[in-house]
Length: 258
Image (cartoon, rainbow, N blue to C red; front, top):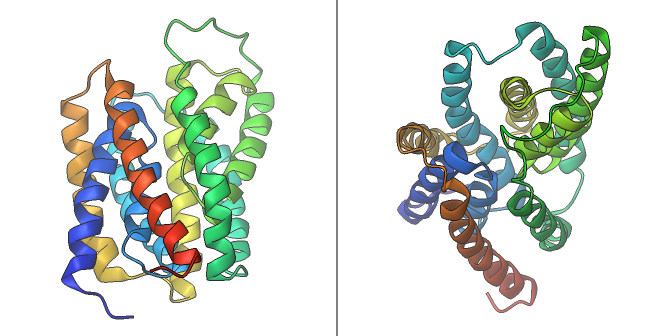
């Protein structure tokens, strides 16, 4: 598959923007995957290459959480195992679907995910705490949640981190800080597992993914330094703009106009 300078000019700035938005408000995947799709590259290659660049930025925030002591490593190990298994299953399933069918699916899945993520920022430090569960029950619920969300992440991806955070907080009875830390570990694990599947099947565009990954790291680092409580207000219009461009291009392609 031949890459042109235009592919890099479209993807890299938007992936950097996705990293910036993700670090301050979440939902970066709603920008980074459409960024690849806007280039007109095959869907499987876009999803696969996004699995290379996005974890590079996620790794930065995971290291930051680890240094600040926000990660429960014992619980994170169980959730990582579930996410690894789920993502492996999801990625293999994604490879069975044709490019055209996948684009039609995206026209349904992406807006639903966007609506959930953009309206799902209700979690806050002021949210009422739920009674903590015994460790073995937290580990079991966390593993099952990570398995299911990992399948979604391997198959598609955008919003997986938000889903994990919400589900671990509600059904795993974790406080926000603990859920955030475990989410970083599980999300990174699912990205790595699905990336391995896509690499073995030759779907990853390495030059584009590695270059975009550096931009993702830069965006995450900048967003971490520019953190603001108005992060959601910044993210929302950016996400909606990118999604509008994606929908317009995809609809025109499916109608045979492009």
